[in-house]
Amino acid sequence: MPEEPLPSWRTGQTKDAILSFFALVDQIPVPERVAVFDNDGTLRCEKPRYTQLEFMLRELREAVRVDPELAQRPEYRALIEEDASRVQEMGLERVLTALVDLSAGITPEEFDARVRAFFDDERHPDRDVPYRNQRYQPMLELVDALRAHQFDVYVVSAGGAEFVRTISQEFYAVPPEGVVGSQIAYDFVRDDSGVPRLVRTAKLVGGPNEGEAKVPNIQRLLGRRPVVAGGNSAGDAEMLEYAMAYPGPSLALLVDHDDTDREYAYESVAGTFAADESITQTARRLGWTVASIQNDWSSVFVS
Image 1 (cartoon, rainbow, N blue to C red):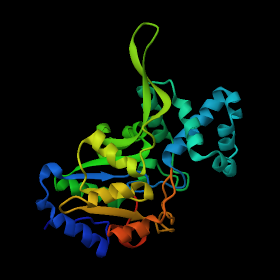
Image 2: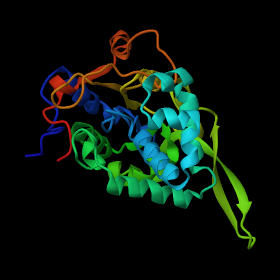
Image 3: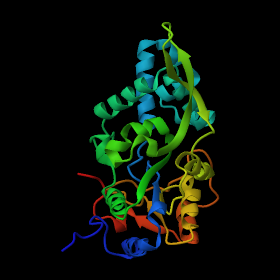
Image 4: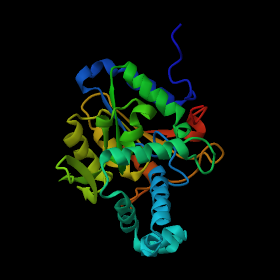
């Protein structure tokens, strides 16, 4: 007998909706079988803080150890002192821009090595497990099922593209070129010997990859329209809405974080703008499939 599909998904309306979509997949031409998923909060845990922010704070601690004067910069001082009110007063964009400054001037290879060292060394602050163990088992099963139906799967994140690309192959079997994220600008320079190289800047190309920006960036960087999209916050809404507008079978899946005991219970919001309604209200209004972590997943994390 064939293995049960989606074994970590409990029997119910949500699993039925996914299986009903798979029953119609033959109506979608194989070249059009494209699935896109947000990263933080959709494929892996994003609490208590975004993993990329944890990485940036590690970079800040190391930079201040080397040059203590950096601690006097207002953004860094607020972070070091864990002064949430001052961070909020300055604004997330200003603070993140200051943190991005820490890696300006290094090569892509140097940045990649720093990210890999972070994932090798650090552990989830609440669960004391490696960050790779904070991937969602049910979502990995869904990704595998899509690939079994000849889907190409991509990651579309508001996080830094290069940060996610470092771990996308290991975590999701998505190659670096299959990641769409916020993009840092690079400068082409030559070293003292005349050898050309790229170095990171602190400038974003085209702004954060969140909200409406995700849809044109998918087209610009992947050149393919999704018919399946998964997300968890208002920053993913337009991407899910666009997938549902495909003139054929489609699936928009929202991960609802409602499990205090096994994960966290919170309302997912966008990082760079305020939405007019909660993302679960948007999902129900537009007819998306909502995956309750508490009710629809028999297990949450990979073992």
